[in-house]
Length: 350
Image 1 (cartoon, rainbow, N blue to C red):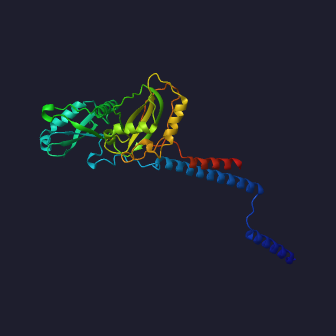
Image 2: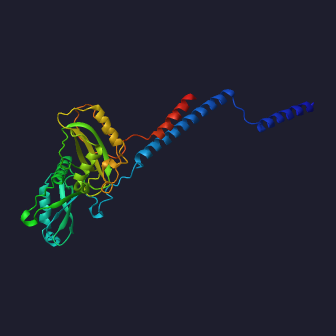
Image 3: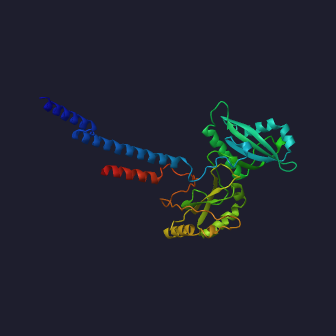
């Protein structure tokens, strides 16, 4: 009587043991749903991760100076760093005499550029010979202002450029200090541009323009400007009805530190037409004269890197040469975005 019951108990025990040892079973519906969610979440997570990496690389390439290192004011004497504007001039007075009248000298410089929001400080007196002293001064914002007002800065820049172009002097107390000479700009925010005296003027008809860089300071090029202009005209084979107009700029706002960007424009004399074949000839001469150094003497001027000549959109367009920044535009690099587009395409195909 008890044997069949024992067999049933053993069968039940065996089934229980098999269930414990067997792997857990899942519902087909649950398994399919879980697999779909797992695949979806995994794909999305991977996509977001790769998208984040691509954007990070874009920001990295954008922020880091791979295109060139910004020198800032690293070229400047450590004594003069940290000031917004730094300039200098020379006087025919001994250093000891100027030290005795330092307060008056500083006041005279301030009165020469007495603009709102600025403060003038004499940074150094450097002896050059027995009775010649170089005066280095800085211009910063007044304590009542957070920065130099843009209008004041623009006016000071115009004054500096006028002194540099016309080789004029600062108006100090003449009986005490005499006349200034050898005015130089060591640092100016936004760069500085000098237009040497020349026969052409920018109201003439614009033909084309091109830029190149020389590893010399603005001051050095000014000394040899007539030679530069003559050699450049000969190298371009300018016609009698064509004029050359040149401006010199330094992105750091220094007239004593290289390099200098030479902005050159070919202008037509008033009343002259603009023949298209001649325009092509000039373009070919400029782009094809790299080995000839644009006609410049290699012993005086190092071979310049030439930018692509630009042509006017209209025949009577007026030339207004402007300094061009060497920094790259705020465009994200192509490589990370190519990766991003490939990821999006792969995700959409799934």
